[in-house]
Image (cartoon, rainbow over all chains, first blue to last red; front, side, top):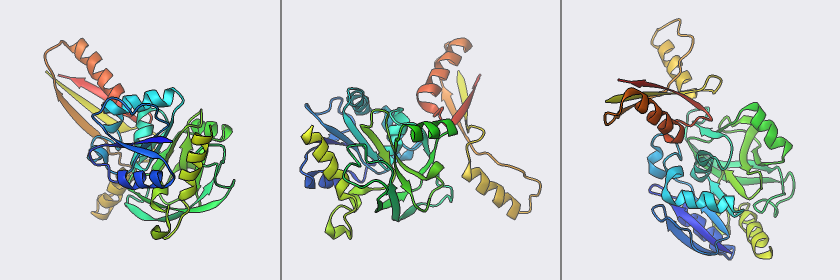
Length: 222
Length: 79
């Protein structure tokens, strides 16, 4: 599996993401935001967490208009796998690849702690190694994780089984407790929690590891 | 020429920051504040291009970058 991790000015989870992908067996390439082309024969693009462009204008807004992001959108439109974690999720909603938007947490505070999630669908490369309804613990660290989508949009996500993860105890005011969503073709995923931060024993837990292992299995097996 | 863009969260989108400002105003003794919505103002210094052209150009800027129309509305003033 060939994977790229996009690095924007202000990205700060890029190396953690690369380590998690490498540990799953991926050949990982770091790609700077000013590059215009992704590496050849790429399977997966990961957009990491952080504060791209200082969160100026809106979270993820400037990164979504970066040169490399146009190539990421093209990769997704060709049916390539793309996932964004935390700021990466914010970037993906700003590109329009995923619906909705991430607003300031309802409690206005930056929240950094482990939260419990439920796996809402196993029908995706990112979630196929979990069990349906499985409760997992994954860390969050964000100020703008309050997922906003109108009622019709939420109903469409539910009808199409595109809610990947839900919070057990909603920390940030997200509509319908949504922590992660899938695109219509199920190959683009955005989530606020950080699976790469709880993916090896030294992290104090491994609930994030199946996310990467399952992705690897699906892509290599395909 | 100048253009001013007002970006606001759409009606119905919860604005926790505006709500926090409303609470703070209440704590300062300002009664009767029923709601606060917080937005942003973006001032653009443009080449002279005529009001119609400026309106069209700034509208395109809003749609492409300055506002996220999923959650925000915008209003443009051209001077």
